[in-house]
Length: 262
Image (cartoon, rainbow, N blue to C red; front, side, top):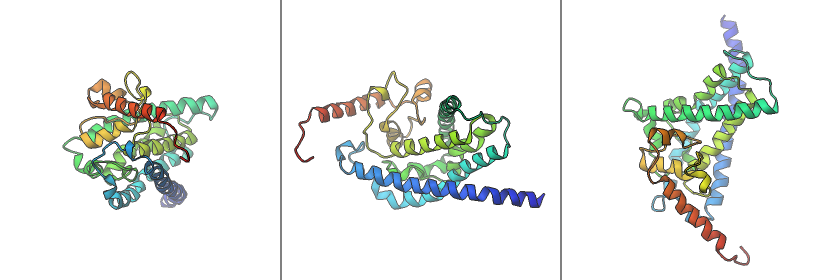
């Protein structure tokens, strides 16, 4: 039995190392690209009077550490699926099954994220979530700035989902990539995506949604959609109006005369 456990561990470790390494690479690469774009558009900063960049070094240290847990959850889910240690086998990978299970996983994860996030805000668990909220004005570097317990609670979806949902491994990885880019943009602190599609009656959200969670604390707990927050009464009362204000900024940019050389 010990020999088998060691063999399983040696089989798991390369998967874990690859997943962690790719996560760290994407963390820095995505952050660097977004900052280059943001520096050209200071008017897009959501919290104009705060500078979250002052916490950059602390956020990077915390993120590189917490990604050991996030990467472990995804690597664990991949390993369980490849070994067949699940309650249901993954669907055969086809175009229709990939699209279907990606949508199912996104919706399931948003539900998981909302309720686990609410759980982390309880008196019992908030001490593990407090590190993330020290970034009152979030930046691209604060995406994974979490306590290890917090990271496990929020990201263990990737470990457990494959056990009860027939998600092909490649779809689980695609979901995690989507979550990475969505999370990094959502923590960027700059609004480029405000539109009628990111406010009522649409369930979609823009960067303002999660930025308000950091600045106002008691609202906007979901991830990809506003559905659960609207149903449960935790949507920020100022969310839709603030989105409209950024829409006006877009309209001004569109009517602004082009400057030669820009």
